[in-house]
Length: 68
Image (cartoon, rainbow, N blue to C red; front, side, top):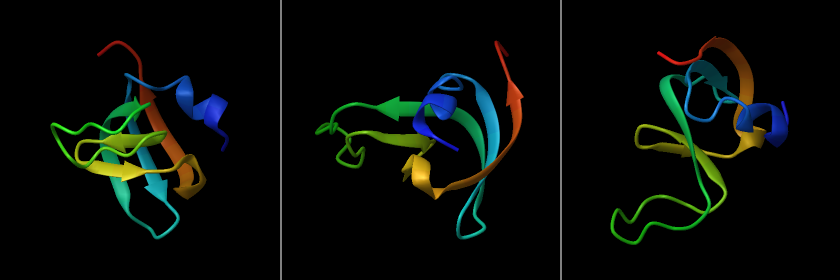
């Protein structure tokens, strides 16, 4: 999976598996800058809830729901 493919799903509900077997479900987000107010968002990372990850960590995207 590459960044362009994953960027298409930002704002949509997804289910994905990371390289270490972690399964995440939720609305996919992307941050372009570090959020000092929250203190945990990293620049150019994707996130679901409080879990931040890089596109290279995504092993499989199983489900997409657009406009829920």
